[in-house]
Image (cartoon, rainbow, N blue to C red; front, side):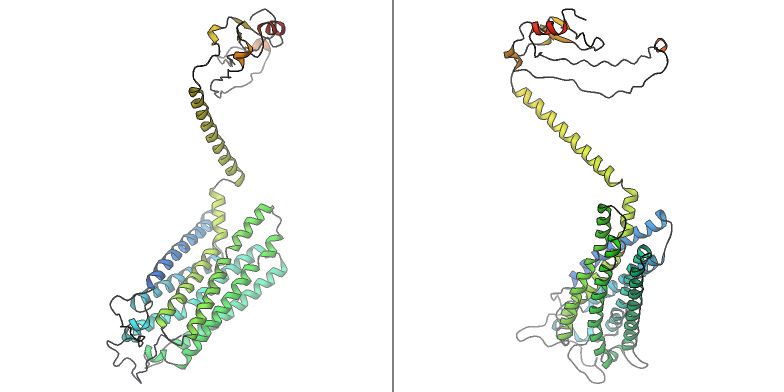
Length: 434
């Protein structure tokens, strides 16, 4: 695509451009060359975030392959190459934003768009996307080939995708190099006015459409293979969710097609303004593609370092239950204080102790008194002391061989009232205290 405006300065387009705008401003608008409004900062912010995420996920991928799996494969190489291409493209776009891309074209000096530095940077912008997208898509195909190689039909579909994608992006790269490289004795600006540049504009739209179709092909390709895997439904859904992150790449490619069509139909009208969304979406398509290709390795790293799902679920539930128990105890203690003085007889007022005959070994103290009537029973509560865990063991041998090792377990359940009258207690447990 050409970076020129609508001017034509003959054999030396750079002559007489000093101080002139790159495009005639609309009626009543005065060009602002000092601090014009620009959409360039938006590209810098978005691209910085996307590049940071991409580098983070690629680092996680390499960590997983080197430290956990301890084996690198071809898809790791293509992923790293795609990352380097995306970084190169992003840096070049940021340099373009600092000079001329982003403001309206009538707020840009014509000499800025005629400079060799601008066209050399634009050469990189035209060449780098095709091989970068090729490496990103090959990463997906090679990953699918590792997982679904036993599936014959899927394997041939992957081969078909690899061949088509490689041929297309290789042809685009070769044509872009031929069309944008200056011939001997030709300047960058003169080359930008070559008739081949018009073909590169059309090729940009074709590349956008092909990228969109290939992204949907890569997205749909693993679905039959995932559903055919012998996995639990939950695990299968998790694997499917990892592959469905590629839907972000498809959305980006659709938007890229839309803005490529706008750029094609403006016919160099306000070129510097309309080019920025195309550059930003190309960055997003490359970086998001590389990031999504690292999702399986990232999930493997999380599974390696985090506890399994069931253990994590049990741990979280236990923490929630413990917190709920603490809050309930605090609420109960506050309510007991607010109830006022209790009318329940204290333990010191009870005078008799009874132990059930059916359980002579139970060390349970039942304390009662004759004045524990039914009225007082309805107003009292159970109070249990704090339970503490103890370490116990069973010692073998004869009964006479069991010695006292100093470990005594004793649990006393004390109650402030008994739901029986004294006569019923004597009838049930007898009159003999322990």
